[in-house]
Image 1 (cartoon, rainbow, N blue to C red):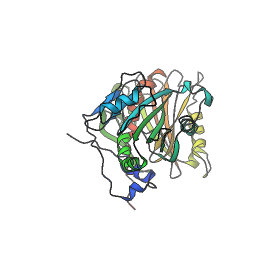
Image 2 (image 1 turned 30 degrees about the horizontal axis):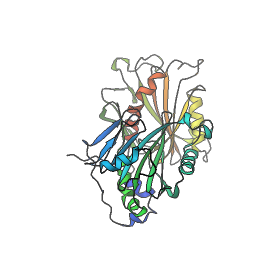
Image 3 (image 1 turned 90 degrees about the vertical axis):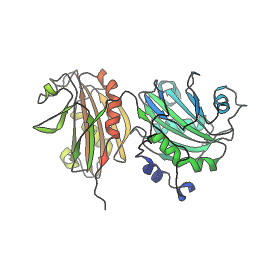
Length: 354
């Protein structure tokens, strides 16, 4: 079986290096294969799990996985008196609307604090690793029943997603941290379009990005890519398909000071696209730096009214990188999101070695 390519492995090592396990030579504790996965359709992603494990996804309370069936059963029997004895995993999706104690639009940090407190978790440390290029926080700790674990949390489409690894003791978790990083790093969006081998290159910030197969670049503006070849060269307000492009600008080009923050850049971007008050904002990661993805519709007075716009903005080495897709309607953004995630995941740094 062909093994997965897992480009986030080394990033995970760097992020959680304080753990003593990373002083040792690292090897995967289990193999991840392209044929061993489950599709979490309600949450829109594919999860690769260890070969030989079993799972239950029919209990109405997420997905429970374990090396043996008895530990799956212990997770789903609703009794605290029954605890797994070996390695386990679980996946849960919690609507943000259910987290009423946190008020409107809680941050990921606030949600993680809430989960740790309400779950009576004795926290050892936190680490961050992008999951499908979204920002996520992993909490290492022990629950009230003495089980050690890692709970990795991120926000996606109005849900808090929680993927966790459980073990009998902290040392086992410590030993498995590298492998868990590989496991959550392999999570992939469902229903993404196949990406072309063709790509765009950014020579200023040194990266490449792939775009969907079958899309066509504008010969007069090679950084503008059209979904429909017969619309190449038309203004984005007139096309019926999608259009992708990107911008890489110095802060001064945006009339911002050298000490401008990502929030300052996002404010500029939101204004430039005249996005209305229904715009959504999500935390992402771009080239290892914090980023924000805005999704919405230009205001009714804008030339782009009626179209959807999705913009991922990052601030990398003092430059504002803005990746943009214009869709035929606001509703089309949701359907395109898996492909957008795949495109962002395809970004590869071409920074010359120092």
